[in-house]
Image 1 (cartoon, rainbow, N blue to C red):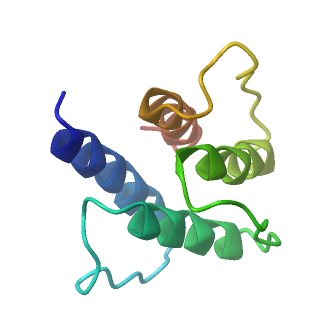
Image 2 (cartoon, helix red, strand yellow):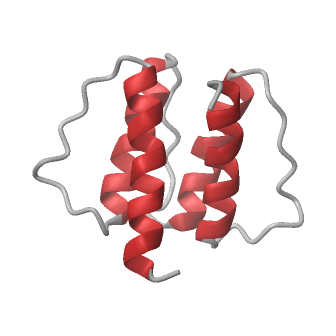
Amino acid sequence: MTNRNVYREINDKLDFLLEDHGVDFDDSNLKVESLDTLHNKVDSLLEAHNCVIPDVENNVAGLQPKLNMLIQGHGAEFDDTDLDQNSFGTVRKKLDVLHHEHGK
């Protein structure tokens, strides 16, 4: 899967979660292929859950603790100890858990 497709897939998953939480997120001025965009969307989800947004690096590894908070906030569990924290594959797996929690 190309980088462009990975970003598009992750954005689509985040867009579903944002919509399902009733969050109005305007990404018209944001790049699809951007970690900034992914972090902004995850931060909006954290705000919807009344979570304190952790101060993390703006990279793939920085998305992991944020997604962990969302997973825990849904009462789900996900063990990522053997997964690469710098991998979009790990992000996608965590988003799959969240989608499952939302009945998708």
